[in-house]
Image (cartoon, rainbow, N blue to C red):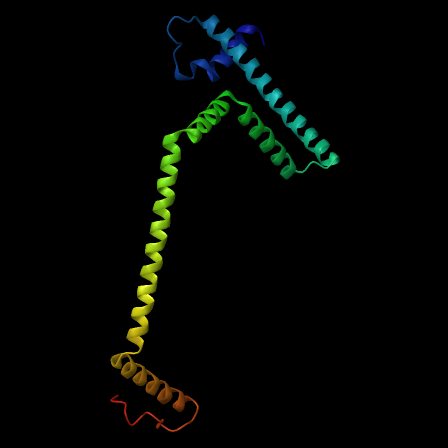
Length: 177
């Protein structure tokens, strides 16, 4: 097979698969480009295979050294966090926050919010006490006592039947249902 035969087969599977050459490109130029593309793709495939082999070898060495994936993640995280803390952006932001923390406006805002929190806490506490007192008063009311007696009577009726007891309980004479 001579070079012209090789070029036509390359062109038939590559550049000329659409049937025509790109504008401004001769057949010879297209053939050269196609050959170069094939070489580059072969090199890429070889590099991928070498990379996979190197990654396997590195994993085996790490395993033999006792380096687990978790410890590697921890190490990467620690290294990344250290790099963040050393970055100009982090140092600038940290300095800015320190300046804000020392400002009078920040201190006043902090005191105001603290006082508001104490007042809110006291308000919730008194609301809770009021609700507790209301429930206590309600529980001692005649309406609640009547309801409580009815529920207790119903409980005796249901429990008495399930335990084989009679339908009569000490309060069953007072129950309307």
